Amino acid sequence: MSTVTAPPPVTAGPPPEVRGPDRSRLLGRDVLRLGTTGLRARPTRAVLSALGIAIGIAAMVAVVGVSSSSQARLNDQLAQLGTNLLTAQAGRTLTGDRTTLPPDTLGKVRRVAGVESASSTATLPQPVYRSSLSDPDATGGIATMAADQNLLDVVSGTVGSGVWLNPATAGFPAVVLGSVAAERLGVVSPGTQVWLGGTSFTVVGILDPVALAPELDTAALVGSAVAADLFGFDGSPTMIYERSADDAVEHVRALLAPTIAPQAPNEVEVSRPSDALAARTAANQAFTGLLLGLGSIALLVGGIGVANTMIISVLERRREIGLRRSLGATRRHVLVQFLAEALLLSALGGLFGSAFGTAATGIMAAVNGWPFALPPEAIVVAVTATLVIGAIAGLYPALRAARTPPTAALAS
Image (cartoon, rainbow, N blue to C red):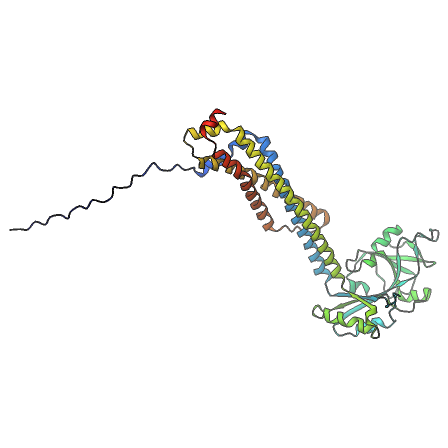
């Protein structure tokens, strides 16, 4: 007799969960199409609203780009000219009297450990005029200086036209003019004669602007030998220019004053010309911060314009909102639609603003002869900022549209 095993009893469990209809979703292409509906319907308003964002972004990008290009120009200058140039000149005593450097100053400086080359200039009390018939009071701020023959090598100067002082011209009435001095005297080419110290001097060269020694731009430079013969120059320098190894600059800087005037080192002023260039750039950076602040304000105003445009759009499209809600659109659908519209409006302004700012940077760099140096991060930050501002500006109008009752919207 076979045994029949009964099937296990069926335990009654909880009834299966009854799921409602699937929650409706908006596809990406639908969000893009709905977001551009309001922009396409009112293109003039959309362009003007995006223009407010574009102006703020263009200002910020241009400020960053121009500042970076200026900084790149300075870095190129310093790389070419070097930061190892030091200058020393006579200072003042405790009573305020101007001191003088002894005639053997240049020889002392050249013996300092770490000094690679040195040169000097001496200011002479001889005025320079275009001719002997010029007004004696019209000096034009041009200083006469006796210069060593290796001066240009030390200060990284170049001759724009003509030649520099050499053994053949340093002992004769020959003069080299700085770029500004030549302009003020009306000298455009070598071979012209000027009236210097009661003697006619022939211009043998005109310098290019000297970045690390701008005092040479307004100077008339003559040889030390002719200065001694005609004007009684005793060899006491006014300014010492010194080049040292890069790793020895600070060491040499500390030794210059005690070496030149061991009895009163505080009466010697030592400086690094490249520090002045860096200080000028630091001042430009401070000004850049101010311009960035103004650009941020413009960007904020543009964001307010976007918010205003979206609020007006909600008020004008209440019937559309009510009709969509009646046909099954949820609050989330309406919220996404208007938020996408605000983001697209801001993104449009951000892209155009970045393009305008980049173009402005390129134009400024080309006009001033700077390298184009716009950090890519600036563009990324600019576009991101517009999207954030667009989201903030469009959030309230989008919430307001989503919370509009369908019946009230249709009845308006």
